[in-house]
Amino acid sequence: MLYKVIAKNLVKGKKCILVSRLFSEDKLLLAENGEVLFATTAKSLELKKYYTGEINEPVYLKEEQIFVEPIIPQRKLLILGAGHVARPLVTFARELGFHITLYDDRPAFATRQNIPGADEYVCDSFERVLEHVKPAENLAVVVVTRGHQHDLTCVEQFLPYKLAYLGMIGSRTKVKAVFKALTEKGFTEEDLKKIYAPIGLDLGGKEPAEVALAIIAEIQAVYYHKTPKHRKLPEV
Image (cartoon, rainbow, N blue to C red; front, side, top):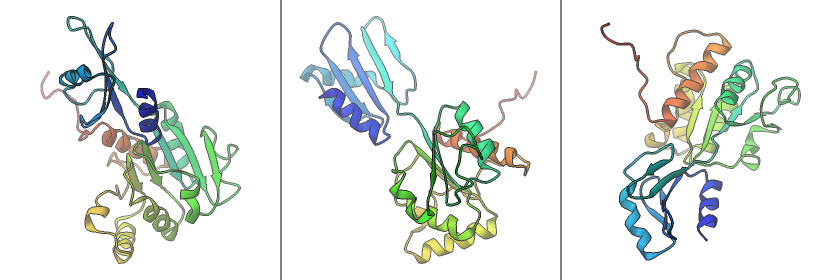
């Protein structure tokens, strides 16, 4: 039963934490927020005290004989629009271990020949993207289509869901126009705050690879709950 609960969470893209007392049957499965998901024994509930917050790698407590193990689903990246930015973005994301889906409505663009390196290629209307890709908490969605209307179509389909990240390319004028259209469709100000737009960190540069770098850097910062800043020592 424990492993069924773990599998169910992974399908939803949810990270969970397994706390085990070695050489016993005591195992406690926790959600990232500390909620108890499953306990193999009544005594296992005592193990909750060993989970103190965010953890991204296993921890072995030798004296207590406790093993705390994060179970992290593979991060997924959906790129909507197979244009110039998508090519370097696929390269960067692949190096970071993402499962990448490249989506476009043009048959000549959503192909391995056009942009190699993705795990899946989907060619279909942007209106039907949810028929091909399931929203999940480990899914980052990058909207870089060739047009204002396509961007709106993509964003409004994913906005109701809890995602790892939702970003949209475009100038401030274009972003404001899309936000206005979303508001007219019934989305709230809180909904709009979930969208990273204009997309990417302000790193400078406008070439496709530079834009892609800014996007993947922002996704990383959001994933690790970091506010980007220089790490340079103030004095040497």
